[in-house]
Length: 342
Image (cartoon, rainbow, N blue to C red):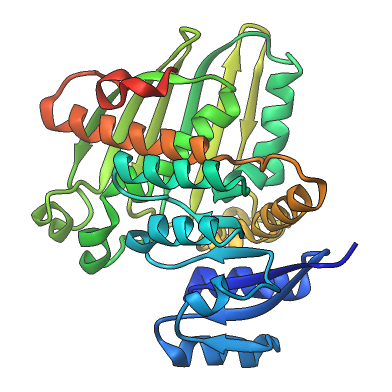
């Protein structure tokens, strides 16, 4: 079978990561064009990775009949529009999360995709991490029996700049959104209610923008199971990503991988490598795996592993958490979107 020909829209940090993977690490894929509103970024990316075409206007990619699929790696406020344009152009779509920061816009984009009959995969890369994937498999195989409690910890090594927080939607929609997705993924269950607490303990500028930098959210699942997620914008020891699913027969724990497993023991104690510093280090293999899964789904004509609905529900959870924090009460997802039918 011929390679799936892909156009990349957005040549920033995450776009270039995907471009490198598609160029060198993902079989069955051929990246043939890159677009960016900053022409220099597109040209630099194309030259570095030997991509044949670099353009400023994404319509050049969407109107190219040779291109089978697009990777949308632009700013969040452009995702939904580009999804709709790509769907109408008959392109299969990989889009970084979130689809949009409001649910009606997400619904319109998903409806357009549905009418066009193209594939849409959302970029929740942690699902493709081998450690989290194995934890899900063990839960699905019944190794821990009925799940009772989920615990997820996510802590970044340093807070984002205020300029990012202004447009990101805040901690629940730009950071914890990954954990909301992981909660559904690991438990294979839907969250029906959330209760959020938050504080400003890291950077007062984040508080001045009306957001928090430290948060804990309690989850109630449809099955009756409970979950707890904690987030912090700053962990001085590195990028901290852990999870545990506890059940009637046992527990499965995912700890932080390290660059190596060597441990030095001497008179002052034991010493090992520091944690990976950020997501591009911790999840490099996961980014490759998610791109491979997207390409394979197109080749086989199968539904993608992370659907548009999977992209929507964590956004609804984020808004439920924001409302819970504002009103200091539990919020059911049905209050946010009765149409979710969880």
